[in-house]
Amino acid sequence: MATSDISGLLGRRSFLRLGVGVAATVGLTACSSGSGPVAGARIGPGSPKVADAERARRIAGARTTSTTLTAVTSEVDLGGVRVQTWSYGQLPGREIRVRRGDVLKVELKNQLPEPTSVHWHGIALRNDMDGVPGLTQEDIRPGASFTYEFAVPDAGTYFFHPHSGVQLDRGLYAPLIVEDPADGAEYDTELVVVLDDLVDGTERTPDEVLEELKKNGMGGMSGMDHGSMPGMSMPKSELLGGDAGDVTYPHVLANGRTFRDPQTIEVKAGQRVRLRLINAASDTAFRVGLPGARLRVTHTDGFPVEPKEADVVLLAMGERLDAVVTMPEGAAPLLALAEGRDMYAQVVLRNPVTQMAPAGEVAVKQLAALPVLMATELRAAEQVALPVKQPDVVHDLVLEGPGQKYDWTINGKAYNPDDGLPIKEGQYVRLKFSNKSQMFHPMHLHGHTFQVRGDGGAGARKDTVLVLPGRAVEVDFTADNPGQWLTHCHNVYHGEAGMMSVVSYVE
Ligand code: C2O
Ligand code: CU
Image 1 (cartoon, protein in one colour):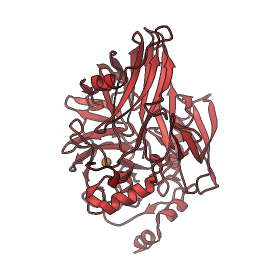
Image 2 (cartoon, rainbow, N blue to C red; image 1 turned 30 degrees about the horizontal axis):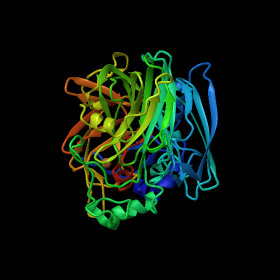
Image 3 (cartoon, helix red, strand yellow; image 1 turned 180 degrees about the horizontal axis):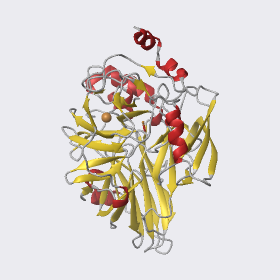
Image 4 (spheres, protein in one colour; image 1 turned 90 degrees about the vertical axis):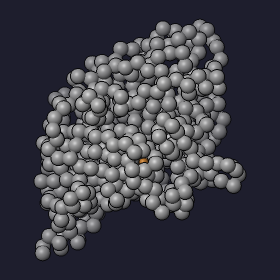
């Protein structure tokens, strides 16, 4: 049969090379679980439909913001500790800030010893700029460069990182802020806070950590010399309903600094600060709060929510959250407690008039006792809420692991770019994530902002949702951005160990 010849020839690279408009019939059978080879013609990154969708996003008179990003091996200062890592020149990388509707043009120069890529996390962009090697583009080889260019349709707090192996667990990340003067938050000043866990600085690289996890299989835990840490066990968290992480980290960071030598900014008492919180960590969820002040949560994953007051918020890997806080008298540490680990990071907000020392350990204890708001409790603001209606197609994604070789799977399978969950343009799609493992999974979808289905119907619009052990979470979205889009766990080790799948637009 002709089609089977084609599918036999179609390695993932040739699939990409086929490029524009060629109906690449990959596989012959539709699998009832929905995650087998995709039957029908995939709408690939080179399809004219992708270009059409981009044209529709371009608005008259849009500005183009151009910048260059160089991925390098470098030494960074974490505040008294200097470590060798891979970065975009500093930690976090320099923020990119655009206005909603702008075209962003970024030339990435790869000076790393390995191929890399850039993924624009949360942005509903054109598929061929999504930065997933083997699915939407070729690797960017060492010494090579690649220019990303796309319209940025939605305002909000985003970030970017490589989608190549476990490079996210290096220092390769930076904020992408998309401004919209009418986005609903009222504030005097802004503070972007990027949280991270960093393995570099130990003798081990993230790749070696992954190798070790695979060797230990179901045993988990890597990143440090176990011998020197008797009694070391997996981090646990009641809040996360089980294991809190698989890797031991020497540092957790807020804006690239350890808690010992934090970034300090001056804010006058009474000023309203818009916090833009980004969890760029690979294996760590954070509780964030400012002891003595309430947070008014206004957005999650870039999109507005019905404002909600909270003492503490939880951010899993890949999640963002915006909250406005009114600066109290004196100094206030904005604390980020690494969930299930005895570690924290902070940014100190200091009143230029009353110079007080930050409260440190006492504040950490105080914060740890306060109730935590989960993003799954939030509701979309009216102007961004999707209608609550019956989906045209439902895909189940059963999350399992770790297997004998630290395999993390979706519907019993490890990632294969030629498999996918077929959908059609215009459909109202529901994904149902069911977590059958002992560990939480922040499940992320590329190219779309779904709506979490809460008890009362519409939860928040998000692109990354926390799925707790033993729980199921349903999310809905409108299929309005043709292409091949990853959905995966934003624990970079789970993702690399297989917990990724493709939401695949077909003709
Ligand atoms: Cu932030 Cu597929 O990732
Ligand atoms: Cu996971």
